Every structure is written in C-alpha cells, then in structure tokens.
Image (cartoon, rainbow, N blue to C red; front, side, top):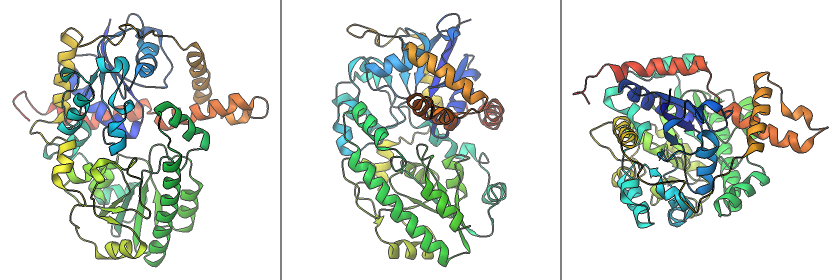
Amino acid sequence: MALDFLILYEHAVREYESLLLLKAELERRGYTVEIRQLLDRKKLKYFTWKKPRVLVSSCMYDDEAINSHVYNNVGVCRRVVNLHWEQILSDTQEAAPWFNFNGNAKRCVQTCWGEKTRRRLIAHGMPEQNCPVTGPVMMDFLRPEFAGYFKDKAALCREYGLDPEKRLLLYISSFGYASMSEEEVREISEMSGEDFTAFALTNRVSMAETLDWFDRYLGAHPEVQLVYRRHPSEWNSPALDALAKKRPNFRVIFADSVKQWIVAADDIYLWMSTAVAEVYCAGKSCRVLRPVPIEHEYDPVIYKNADCLTDYAAFAAAADARGDAPFPIAREVIEGYFDQSGRPAYRRMADLLEQVHREPPRGDPFAPPFRPRFNLLKFCALIGVHMMYAVKFDPKRLSRVAPGFAAMASRVYGYIDKAHVGRAEARTMAAKIAPFVEKRGEGEF
C-alpha cells in the first residue's frame, strides 16, 4: 500500500515535535504519514510498494539536495515540499543564490513562515505558486489553544533536579560552529560556497566570553540557577563540561523543547538564535548578549537594530534587575518573518500538503538537465554505522586499524545519535499532542 506522506527531518529537537503535530493533523484527515531521519537506513519499501506520493523534506537548496534527500530515499518523486527550517538569514545570505534555491529546487514547493521570506524568494526567481506562506508550525504550541501543553516551572525543575524556588535563567545557545573542527567548517564552506572560517572564530570567542560572564555571575549569586540550552550542533564541548563541574548552579540540558524551557524560565538570554521569535510568541521578553560584534554577513536580519548587552556589567545589571525588559526586536520585524495568522500554522501546512497530494505536480524536480544518481557508498555505510549504533559499538575503537574509516564513521555515528528518537519517546510525544488535535471539530480554530 502506497504511503501518502513521508516526512524527513534533520534535527530532532528543532523539528520532531512540530512534525508529530503535522502528522496527527494529516492522519486525522485520513492520510498515511511516516517520519524518518535523513541518516536513517535506506529501505526498499519506500522505493516500491510504500513509495510516498509526497516527499516532505527539511531542506532543499539545490540539485544535490534533490538527489540526496529525494532520490536516495524514495527514488523519483515529483511532489516535493520543503518545510524550509532555515528561513532567518543574514542580509548577505538573503542575497546569496544558495539560500534562495537554484537548479531544480525551484521546481519544489518551498514553504515560507512569513511574507518577507516569500517576497525574497519571488525576487530571486521562485515561481509564486511554489512559495506559499504557511506560518511557522513550531509556534503553534505557544498559541492559547495549546494552553496546558507545557509543564510549569515547578514540574520542570523537579524533573531535572533544579530548585523551583530559585530563579531560573535560560540561555539559548547558537554556538554551533564553536564545537566544529576546522575540517567540518571547511566542508560546510565548500558546500554552501561561503567561507564560514571567520564566523567560526566569532562563535568561539563569543562563547568563551559568555561562559566567563556566567561563571562570574553564578559564582556571586549561588541563589540563581542557569540552564544552558546548547545548539543541536554543539554536542561536543569541553568548555561546557568544565563550567558545569565548577558551578553546580550551571546546567547544560538538551532534553525537552526550547519552547518548554522558554515557558518555564524567569529570565531568558540569547546570542543570535531564531528562538527569539518563540520568546515573542510566548508573550515573554529576553535579552541579547553580544560580547563581540557579529559580522553582518552572518547576523540574522531580525537582529538588525536589536538592543544588545555587550559587557559583563550590563549583563549583571540586567540579571539583577529581573522583571520584563522591553522586547529587544521591533514587533513588525518579528511578525514580518513569522506570520501570526488567526489560523494555526499546522492546519495551514496540512491544507497545503493536501493540495499538493491531490493536484498535479507544480513542477518536476527531476526534469532535465538534472540527472539523479544513487549513492551506493552512503547506502552501505549507513547500514554499517546503524549496526554499530544498535549494539553501541563506538567506531573510534577502530582508529588504530582504520583511522580514515573510524573518523568518518564516528562523525556519522554522532549525527545519528543526537538525531535519534526512540519508539517509546515518539509514542509519548504523540500521545501528548493528540488531545489538542482531536478535541476540536471542523469549526474550531
């Protein structure tokens, strides 16, 4: 039996919760839906009897992405919708061809959270029908209709061994490049056509200075506890481990969603995270910490003219002041990129996917001159690494006998591990979402 929708995700923490909400809505409408990770083993059924009618991707920038995300997962599929999880860019990136899609990626449906992104894509040659505004699905959990979905501060603190009576500070990190090796930075630069070497250095310097601020403040204020929410790519950081050992009131926690921590926190701090929009949608405020300037070519456009704290004294004064500060970014800027419609985004997205499902393809991603190719090496490598992961065999143990393979396999193993969502965890998350989808009738929100 054919599958209606196959949804591929990259980062579990960033995407999985929203995908379960979208899946629940599509299933409520009678469709079959499955969610897979980009580095999951490739399965024959998705090429044959369970081939999806619509492939829903996490990103789709160019022909190589069509080859990797579509052809190597399901074969030829002409109905491709990109959930487009990276929409908040710098001004330089907004002008760059790679971020505005090229090749046959323009023949795919590229969803937009807001009108500003839609206008940008159209100006760069995207057909209007291929860049609809759906709103940001991840923000739906912060709508009034989802009241009661998140745990309160007391429950969350008890779960993670924090004191609910103490002030809870939250830092949402974006230092993804700080933990990357020079080789990884070089690979990303080559893939995107943009040199991220300077930005990686800015990551490292900003992270070191910010951690120093936290060290000083938490040392002087043992009655305060700070949860450091690391970036999905920031999974190997000795600096975080060292500070957590030094300061018992500093905790690095990656579990639960960013939204959950935003709802529970007393004070919120960021560097350049797009989660600033989630803070806004939650009806809270935050402070932007910028120990050193960020080059404009990397700074997200929504942070232009934002109110920032640039030294320890300003940070300490803000932390001491408590209370809600004015939001650091203008309302019209936030809402231009994150459409705040009266209709939840997950329902608007489901409407779009239904339309793509029943109508002829809006474009052919496999039209010439694109030539698909099957990556047999990756296919075999993923089988091997997943077998290692199943028995918890760390590929680093092979570094003496096969250093090249061990390095490659270790990197893939790490990506698989941080993106993995177990079946029991997925069922628990889905059960939590289900009542909020099932409780309404067709006439409700």
